[in-house]
Image (cartoon, rainbow, N blue to C red; front, side, top):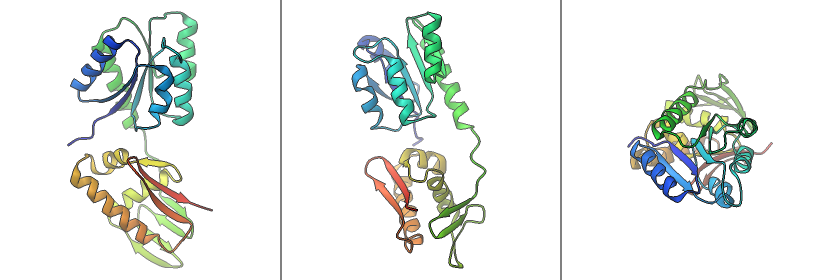
Length: 230
């Protein structure tokens, strides 16, 4: 089963929100919908998302404030603001918060879908870091040669082991979601690929076990954390 792109939707209009959620799900997205701004940022913390669709006019907490809160948690996630406001100042405020796009209501849902698909596609083709040499405590990891070296002793890794360790290194001391790892390395999210990834994580822990300052933690229900204490 292919991993679905996960949309974080904040919209207080219950009728419109339900229709939009159903439409996006029919187009093969997973959607988490929040209808009250005061719960939005806390809800965002519980999931792993590829894009945020945020209504501006909300009860309790407006979309711009939510967007600012999300930006503090994730500096790169794309955002699209939805609003009935057409004032230049409001549009500029949305972009200053970090909007990738700004759509005024009413709008055609097909147009929104195309914008979402275009933004996610741009994100997916962002160049991966050219770095291939990583220092992990007393270990040196060469992701091109797929070798871990410590005190002159070398451990050769399989391609999947090296890809997974590189991804962990690129997110060192930060959460790497299971969905991200499965999508980038296996290309799909299924029972057997998830179990396979768990086996690789166990192997990587074994390879790095001689340095007590390194730990690959399993964050229940979320993913993995490569913790390196200097």
